[in-house]
Image (cartoon, rainbow, N blue to C red; front, top):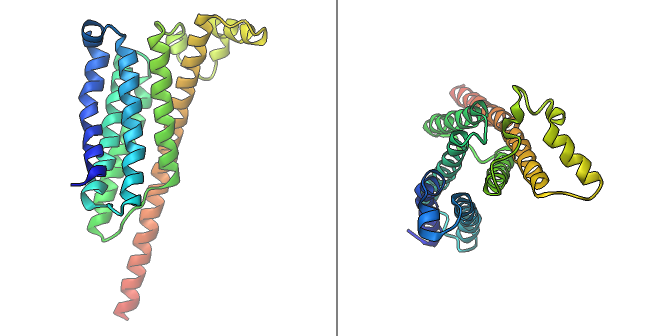
Length: 233
């Protein structure tokens, strides 16, 4: 155990706090603030520990097997809990969350299979982009909800992303933006649009990064099999 690993464990402990803040009235009763506001603070602190523990582990030369095991688990628990609660709060579509979490299960299983084959699958750039997009989506949607119920929740349409400009609230917000006279409701609309846009990016990057990981695995597996055949000759 070292400081980076303690920070990672702390991030895991933030997960139940995040869920309690969003699904119970504890924040209002104990602290007198919105549960969404408390959840935003908890999530941002957790993201900060994610950045800090990796930096400390590298700078102090304290990269450990336990840290490599705990860090991705902490990230997945935090993001999964936040996304599931967003579905419960009707702030995120369930299908998008299923795609994102399904990718996490597949990649975790793939890493286990790769480890058994003696292959180490390194983090891909697409996976890091996905993680940052998820964080932006979660924070933006929580901010939109903290300022009041999002005025265009799911935009009232089956396919909101494709035709969001047809919704009256969105048209009004963009009209006010062109006139530089934004209202508080307009800010909610734009916050929600940013959150939903980032969620779409997360879904796209989840699919792309899954392809990256699968391609990397089969490439390394092919190279290993080729080396074995060459040695056998």
